[in-house]
Length: 90
Length: 454
Image 1 (spheres, chains in turn blue, red):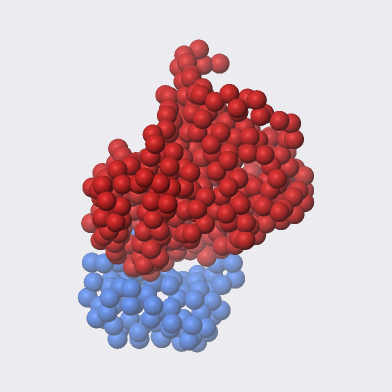
Image 2 (image 1 turned 90 degrees about the vertical axis):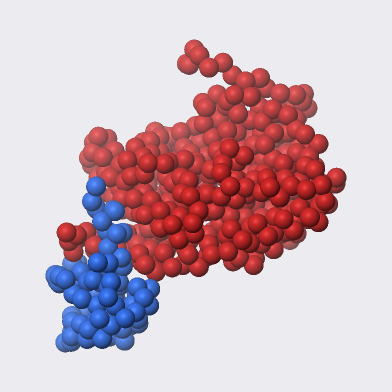
């Protein structure tokens, strides 16, 4: 399993989750967990996904998700989970 | 499992507090490139660097994407060129040819800098060392990405005052050769005492002879993250302040370690060290001076500055060594003037002087760094500044360095613009009294005694 973390930050609007999930379904990325909250007034969503069976390379997913975010008007980032594990876990 | 707040904290560091990995530096040994023919030596150097560092830039970019963290520089360091050119260089022109070869490699590979146009002369100079040092002004003026360093002393050997006297002249000449570009040649030349073999930071990086054929060294950064963390410790006592710095340094370093391991695997080159240095950039909010001021100083340079820097430097190391098994290089806090908005502000406000900076170098990781001084400063005075800084390194068994720029045609009160990561700097006043006779003596300062530490 290759886990990635998707973060979506921006102003709340209709259809953000739908659009992100559609993209993930199209590229065969499996969603493992979703959580959302408001941090400093911004809608913040985090998804933990498994990219190991994706039809696209991790770096391609990263670029396309950032582009999707620009189209919707929010920030979308996909990062490999290791950066968070290394920083926050011993 | 990682939670949303932790993810948010990391991304805030990257997006708002300038967290980045400052550099991935490949150290490459050029010892097997030595030949008695200059052309053959240059060919060998070119093929070896191009072969080993071929994928450096693309690998760096790929890691940036995977983890969503910027990797600002991709660099190369090589074996000190004085050694490599010893058999084939019979004039300063010959050495300049090697510098040009290195510059071509840097340009073709798209790396930011290539370091190692260097000589190690802590005790004495060979003919080759002297030729290399004498070629520095021309080499720095005809190349764009080559960096040069000279190690003139160590705790074990003492200080080579002949080399320091020579470098006073060389720095002046380098300034003169590059006077059309604000004497920028001097920004690519560092004079060291106790230079480490595995430093990934420029301009002082070289690949020491004690190193393996090729190695990956990574320099972390993060003054902005540290500043933000220290701000939250306002009013807390020193114990709590130190805890916060340590924890933050740990987090920053772990990212560096992750990037280093990933790069090492992708490039099939062994991992060397993580350099824990907090390195500022001219960007607003990426400043060491801001960190010091957020500890409670009105301006950097105020009484208490040296103590604040000592705390920062030591706690960064304590947090960092827990995060990586192999720590090396310079590891500490850098205090360059031109590359740090807060330092520039402190100089402009009259809070920070050359003398206070010298005191600060006793407890930080390097030394007098990126300091612009009047263009008419005498070469013996520059040699005197170097000698003082080298003495601090020698006696305290630490690395110290000098990178001063006597900007041709500029005087106190004026500003010099270097651009990019090198930033801009106000010209700082230098003590006007002479040290001519002291420098003219020549010879060596003997190695210090290693007992009776007082």
